[in-house]
Image 1 (cartoon, helix red, strand yellow):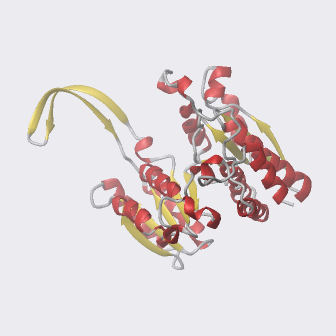
Image 2 (cartoon, one colour):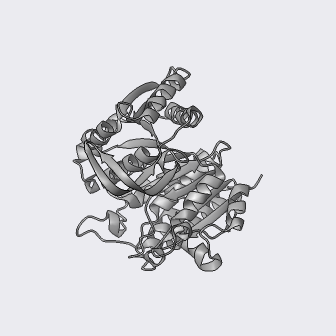
Image 3 (cartoon, rainbow, N blue to C red):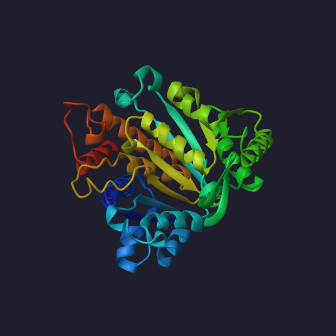
Length: 366
């Protein structure tokens, strides 16, 4: 059966980097027998410009009907003055919620050819391969929020008259925790069979439930080693000795922060893909970087994270790990040959543009 994809280029450098991933997709279809068809849609600022909203209903309908979605980037300074409900990033939050994408998989892989690009010593990061599994549809980002004016407010032993108070509620059910934990354990079984669960159980009630639930789920995976860290220690350990980790599972807020730390260890966020999955195996696949409006249209953006996101799409949604491996091998071949976009080039190294890098990956596919 022909697989159906929806491609959402988005804003900023999104259309440029997605165009290179499409060239890879065409090569896999024409040369390697991938049975796939795709169409394009609008999201974010591009959707607002065309339809006055960041996620048109037609885009969400196409996304739900597709086997997977490949997404570029979202946002730009021209949209900063819009009401919150109309800003481009709301489109991304809405499509995640609409598709039920509760599991965010963010690998941090440091290719040997780029070991010197990391801010850490090469011996600490060479061969780094960490997968962060972040719960994506719960926690404080989706909890109740409120801003109110009160006549008096207590801060410790001090009573402050007439204060503006804001609150954001961190809330998780055992169901949400269990399903993300199982995602992490299943992923670990395909890797080095180690899961580290990150929480703040010494302070937060929600984290206490998190830890209890992960421990219970872990009993179903006796072949996987389970450990626990508080989030502050986990952040420190990622910088001190990152290769101790295999799979890290954590909540929405902590995962947002830790995955950015792990990404920086690799030297460039232009190299890192991600996947957001639902229970049916549908996923939205995207590079972790933003829309980079300062370089949009200049042809210098690094397309490798988007191409590697296509690899994750093939592996996790289309179950074509063989073709995902071809993409990974092609990227490594291109890096070994010395090609570098500006974000991964060392001082004095020659740089290539977006199109040249995409063409090189296509050629390396064979």
